[in-house]
Image 1 (tube, rainbow, N blue to C red):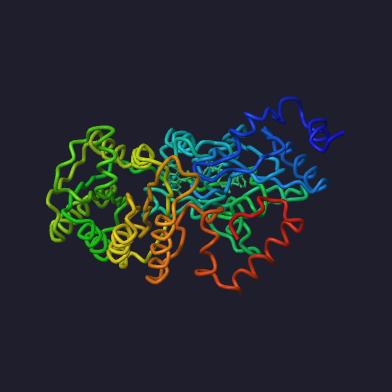
Image 2 (cartoon, rainbow, N blue to C red; image 1 turned 90 degrees about the horizontal axis):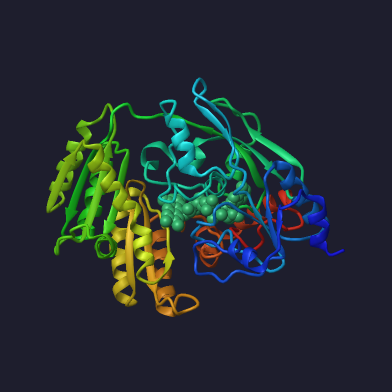
Length: 452
Ligand SMILES: Cc1cc2nc3c(=O)[nH]c(=O)nc-3n(C[C@H](O)[C@H](O)[C@H](O)COP(=O)(O)OP(=O)(O)OC[C@H]3O[C@@H](n4cnc5c(N)ncnc54)[C@H](O)[C@@H]3O)c2cc1C
């Protein structure tokens, strides 16, 4: 009996998918990376399916790549040769939603926006909202510590995670954390698993914190700028003023142009950047304050609106950004994050890298977090970015680190950022991380070659 036939025998019918075309469709994420060839796919429906798979993988020393929806932008869910792709996408139950405790207990395949919608039926919300929230899973969000538009006020996925159920590499089931708002018993294993990119265990359930949904719609500011740097200066001024935006997003002209070419949003010729800000509930006056700061920093047009329709339209434009850029060519999507006061300098560094290396870079930013996504566009016919694009990316990474920033604010290291890890972490951090990996996955079968 082949190794895989042994697994097929142990799992219920229909869980193991071996058709090569189907397996190939589970083998990659949203990056250009060419995946390895998996043995097959396990489409888990229960925790026990995951336990069985991991016990089998340990016994046969087979690498396992956990996968949510495959919307990742760092190569974290790409197949390695001879692996099993372990899809959690069928585990979609919201097991509990407690308005009294403001928590939800969910399976990993729940789509992020579905949880938010379920919470809103009770006057609550699930705050972390990556732009991909209509297609990404909670498991993937947890494994990458995903951010999003609302994170400037509510924090990233880790800030909404209270406890986890994790199947370890050998099939044992570990429960971490709690369902209380506080707790310091032992080391913070929950925090360790969040952002571990499938390299320490497979998340099969999560206890998540919900928040009260704002009672009144936010006031939204839209501002256009004659230069990207001026928009960055406005962001730094807004943060320093204590305005407390609940959202602060930035798009450069290349991004706006890509959206305009696709959806005709009426982009004016001189506009080099657009800033969208929001202030919620008890702080509506802060929208006016943000508008004033945009004007003081050179905005050519500023408008404040409390209309839910206009707000939705603006946020909708922002959420189109990634897909609009994909229409231009293949994309290397980067994710640097800098201290917020350094945002203007980081913006200048990105612009300089684009010119120096003759590269088309479209930048969007969760600007209120100092988190920029410079997207390097290259010829779709090429198997990977050409040397000038890598050189521009290298320059951007080094600039971010020199400004006190980090290589990745929310997408994770995956495969794509490993070549720069040494610049940020250094040998001692690497040694400690490998020690942690050894504790949880001594055989190195969980998502090998990713993250550390
Ligand atoms: C249009 C678009 C917009 C995006 N916007 C944002 C954004 O605003 N903010 C942001 O943070 N990201 C964003 N992303 C990136 C991506 O959506 C996130 O990284 C998301 O968290 C990935 O979720 P997923 O379910 O697709 O995970 P996958 O891509 O399937 O996997 C991501 C990683 O998680 C691991 N993993 C998945 N499930 C589990 C599990 N149950 N247990 C253990 N490990 C697991 C995988 O092995 C992999 O390492 C965007 C992507 C796209 C395409």
